[in-house]
Image 1 (cartoon, rainbow over the protein chains, first blue to last red):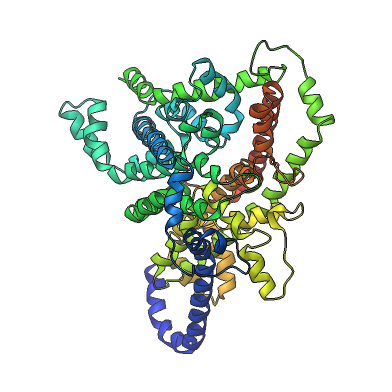
Image 2: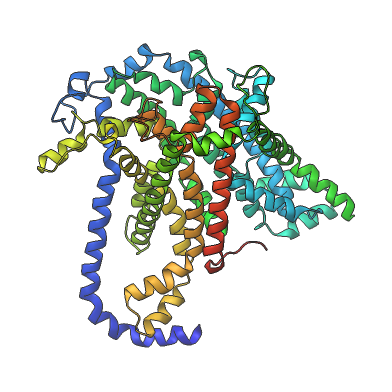
Length: 294
Length: 294
């Protein structure tokens, strides 16, 4: 490595001058591409917000107006008048918060077991855990539905929340990767001080892993907030609907109220956008960790 | 000591272990049993032997249609998604200014709830007053019925899925950033060009993240449901051209209550995914650099 670095120092200035022009053109092309792609990726958001501010006649005009002629907030009011939108919001919050709590508690405990406690059969069960990551939940959907049906839990939030307390392979894996990076010495000294395994987990590992716990909380928040198939199967009563089911109410087979529907979509999306900007680094690092260290 | 460690290990992984038996292994076995019955969700299940499987393979055009739809969506959509995500990551990895802003722009669409983004795309691709056709007709290009057209509904769903390619991009980006720069410097000394470096250093050194995204992309693609459900008003139209496998499974189980039949469909899906995953590991597994355990 050292030899390479020295060699580089000698050759670089000569090369740089001749390459400067080409480099500049290359930069321009890269920025042009990035800006064009950015416009393409932003456009649907722009259209979403724009339509939510257009009155119905303008939303369905052809050719469509790029910007609303006048900002009309009426659609946002109508969202709450056409359907019990506030109720959907509360339902989504209950399911999501319950699911996140269950996920964080169960996944941290299980992940610590896999990361640090050498018990017989650990490698076997870890392989099983990885294998279940590849199993689509739809394969087991019908028997699981029948279990909840037998328990009388259909049309309640329980089938959506309770499974979260039994861990999630993806997040267990992610947390295990984090826990393995914590130096063992900390645990060993705590152990010598008479701390039990759960004490070590709770007093040492968890405080050191707050960022990764936040990452899991954010990612699972997104998962529960966006879930559609679960509520679709388990919730029959309109008063129990979550937002994902609720915004479909604006779309009849024939009549669609575009403005209010887009306004509702903005309101569904808003908490996620806020969470993303508040916890951006946790999102990015969490997703990156699973892929790279996988 | 070892014995008690094993006990502690199992206490820690207990939530997941219970979940595995209650929500995964148990239901898998139970649904295998159900797939040999005519269970309807109510009353008694009658043993029908291989009848369900026989009907699926020989006398069910919708099964083949759903399988074809899913296959088409996967074989086109997954590679396209991989390429777009990788391309975005490579562009961002060129030490551009405002990298964080661009990354946010490309990533943000992937956190939009599937229901909300589907409703938005319905509006964009609306044949009479949608912006997509407005732009095309402005440039005197042929317009389309998009989601209402038998031929175009799947390609349109693929275009919609590409908006979310930024999720994979974040993983690629982390992979690209972990490639040691000394490799590039050594190659430059040997006079390697950009293209050469891309194919002989960048791609091989990030093969683990490409592989991860490929596997996860395929499994996700097999599960496509929400988008198709929303754009087709829950019927898989036009003319079943957006009836994907899980969608069909859902309909048979929860719309027509053919639980036994749908269980057979679920097991066929499981076997397909198993085969595809094993093939992927056989083809790519050896060529991929994978850091698996300590």
